[in-house]
Image (cartoon, rainbow, N blue to C red):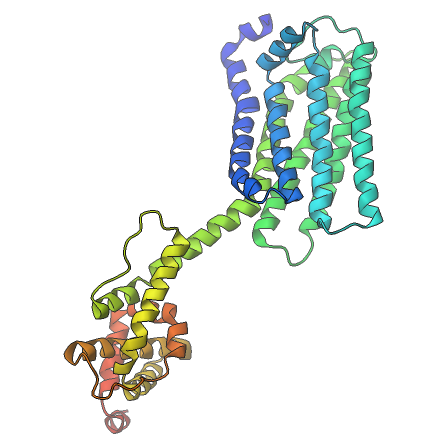
Length: 409
């Protein structure tokens, strides 16, 4: 405790970076995943992700020096937090391996190799946790160490083996997990969000390997009478923190990224339909009623439905001849075929709205022209309406009789 008091500002800075920041990020990841986990509770893969994030949060909370001291005082056993924290780290490693194996192979994969791999992970890492507690019970570690236990007891019988066991178990799990992830990243046909999430996970596990290397270097240095404790106490915690942040973001990115992408696509589509929607409001006299708690998907559906509902009766006022001339005019002005169709449809709709305003009912109330393609291309038509100069040029050219256009050309 004296060592902490000598440099409180430095300790606090390292404390927040190494413990509370990754804890906050991991908690945020868990909160983001939680609604989906609750909604799809029967999905074992989602439950596993939630459990893994919760376990990662527990690792950083219980490895905080103040919580270590609290657990030691609560139990009355100096350094009992050591096997507890080591057990949490080991359980997290085993859970990561199980999750990656399941995620990579799919829940439907019941092959003997997959089952054997999962049984191996469960049995080995359960055995490691049991061994950690047995070694602690056999060791003599009476002096409480909050930050440098690994190096302080690096040469103490049984504690030495315990420290080495948890570091090796952690390193092996991270090495296997990292290899599985990077092999997966190289496969074809991955969703972009999943690929980036896997890359972040891979980077996080590579940093975990650096954490293990740094810790082992400091411990081995103690075996040979050297003091490299700063590697364990000052360098390893920030590396572990950055690793946890990358792993948390890697787990939530495929879900959150796709969710945000879909939301952005829906909002963009809703905004894209605004010009045609405003024109249909002009023709109809009213728009879609405002609903305060409507979702973006619902607002888009209601806008699309409104546009199509107004277009159907408006079709009786559409001049098919004008539509053909407008299409030819758009092509003549150098627009590509797809753009030309959208411009021609926009010109026809504008003309129909103006005609309806002049003569609310057409002379013959028969069904109008086929508007199937028009109803399917409302997005392209609405985009065309955003370019009034192009619309005006096409309308002006389409209004000139074909013979005059040919003579002029």
